[in-house]
Length: 153
Picture 1 (cartoon, one colour):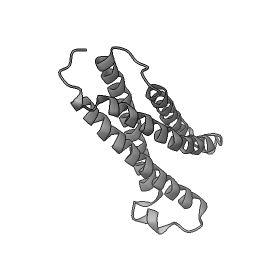
Picture 2: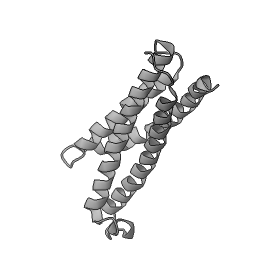
Picture 3: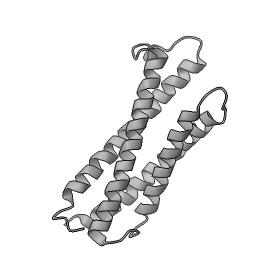
Picture 4: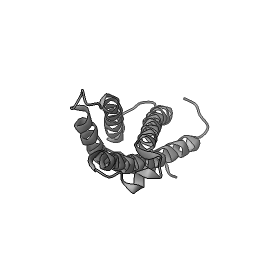
C-alpha cells in the first residue's frame, strides 16, 4: 500500500483504543448496576435516574455495540497499517494479543445476546469473559505501546 503517511491511521487507532477502554469501564459500571437491580429487593437509586432497569440495559447494550464496533475498527486499522508499513503481518506479539481481544469481545457480545432464564450458562460466561477481557486489554495496550515506539521518529 503506497500511502503518504500512516499518522492519520495511528490517530484513529489511538482514539479507538481510548474509546474502547472507556466503553469497557462504562460496561462494567452499568453491568454492576444491572446486577444490583436484579439481586436487591429495593431498586437502587443509581439506576432510577437512568430510566430504571430498561434504561440501564439499553445503555449497556449501546456501550457493548460501541465497543464491538471500535474493536473491529482497531483490527482493520492494525491490519491495514501493518500491511501498508511492513508489507506483512506478525512482526510482534501485538497481533496475537489483538486477535485474542477481538475474539473475547465477540464471545462476550454473543453470550450477552444469549442471556435469559432459559439459558443459565450465558450470564456466567459473559461475566467471566469480561473479567478475562481486562487482562486482554492490558496485554494489547502494552504490546501496542511497544509497536507505537517503532513508528515514532
